[in-house]
Image (cartoon, rainbow, N blue to C red; front, side, top):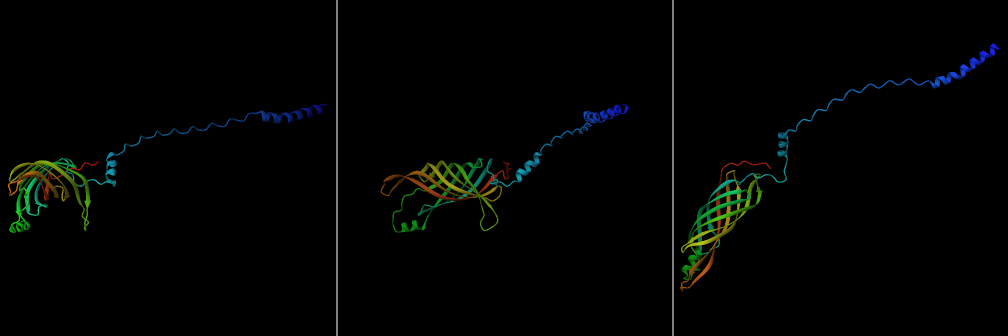
Length: 250
C-alpha cells in the first residue's frame, strides 16, 4: 500500500512539472538604452553677396556690354564737308556740331556749316562754250537743330585682331539756310557712322541732304520757285565730355 501511494505521488509530480514550466512567464527583456540626444542643427551661414556678384560678373553673357557709353555726355565735333550732287559747282565747307546725349541711343544737337562754292571743270567748259548753265542756288551757310537716333551698335575687325566699336544713326531736323538771296527755312535728313577710337574720341562719317525752296531768275527775266537739295558728305572727329564714363553693370 505504501508502495502504491509513493508511485502515485511520483507520477503526479512528473505529470504536472512540465505544465508548471510552460505556465511560467518569461522574464521581461531589458529596456533598450535611451538614444543620445541629437545635437541641435547649426543655422546655415548667410550667403556671401559679394561672392555672388563676382560670380555673376564673371559669367559670359550672350550680349556683351558696350565698351563706349554716350548717355549723359556732351559731344563736340568740328566737321569738314563737300557736296556730292552738283556737277557744275562744288561746295566745300567746314563747321561744328554740338550734341547732348540724354540716352545712349538718342542725341539732341545743333549743326552749323559754312560753305564756299567752286565752279567745276564741267561748269567752266559749258561757260566757255557759251552755253547757259542751269540756275542753282548758292548756299552760304546752314544752321539746324537735329535729333539723332542710333538703333545699331556693333563690333568690327578687319585683317587684325583689334576690334573697333561702331554705331549707325539716323538724323533729321529743321533750321535756316542762308543763300545769296537771303535766309530760307530749311530741313535736313541723313545718316551716319561713328567709330569709337578711345573713351573720349570718335571718328564720324555723315551724309546729309539739306533741302529748302528758292526763287530763281532766268536770263529772260522769268522767275520760278524750285526745291534745292544739297547732298553733303561730312567727315569729323568728335570729342566727348566728360572724357571718362562709369559703366553700370546690369
